[in-house]
Image 1 (cartoon, rainbow, N blue to C red):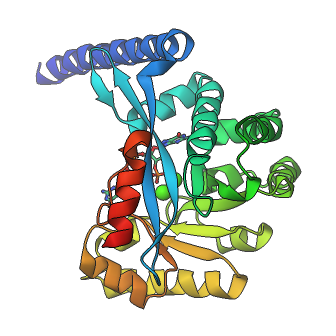
Image 2: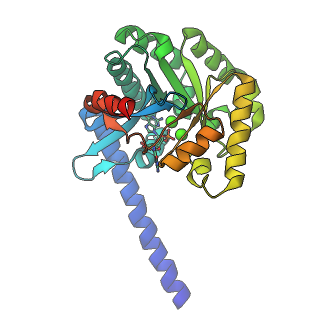
Length: 275
Ligand code: C2E
Ligand code: CA
Ligand code: CA
């Protein structure tokens, strides 16, 4: 009896979840096709550890849904990826980020996240080249962040795309390093400019000497291989002190600033630079 009751409950629960999911897909299609103004790109500064000055900003997508309010990218980007909307949405972010960055100091870079589906899009390199020429942003000021998921299929096509992007003059960063499918061989299979050390290793760095050791090992590798290393998710002074001690070259996190709308970037940069 109990068993059957539970089965019924799960079925109803699953039905509700499936319906919510369908609604989210519909809303997302509507927004991408008819209401792109619901999407906003926010920016979070990336700080040079040695000088404590900003080297650039990461573009992070926000969706202001008319009824749901602010929907987290963690909730809608995987859906957009599955239903084939991420290529268009990604292009929107790329174009806005390049345009916004032309208004910043010419020493500042903008980092844009690329999802695996965007990476598999045969038009990606053209799209990036077009976003650069339309905005007038020098290629060296654009950094593309890819995750290890992209490299999982380390096929000829993946390598060709990475090399074609590099020859445009843009920089390539390996994002979320240390999570998922991490493999050291990724670091020698392609000349990344930067490795971003996942927040998971920074969060407990004050109490976990193991995490500190892992961060140190990654920054050591980066040094030897000529790459920058960025610690993600730095929230406290103490964490900053530790990622500095473990030789991260850059840091990013709430300690410096939360991601902010383009209009607040000048203010945030002034604050970060002054502190
Ligand atoms: P990510 O690329 O690893 O971005 C960093 C995430 O950490 C952001 O979450 C950022 O707001 C958050 N964060 C930054 N500093 C701190 C901190 O000190 N503490 C904590 N707890 N969190 C911090 P957000 O903006 O919610 O984005 C989540 C993920 O969604 C991103 O992770 C990225 O994978 C994806 N994403 C965001 N925008 C885009 C986009 O335009 N395109 C694609 N393909 N993915 C995106
Ligand atoms: Ca990222
Ligand atoms: Ca990351």
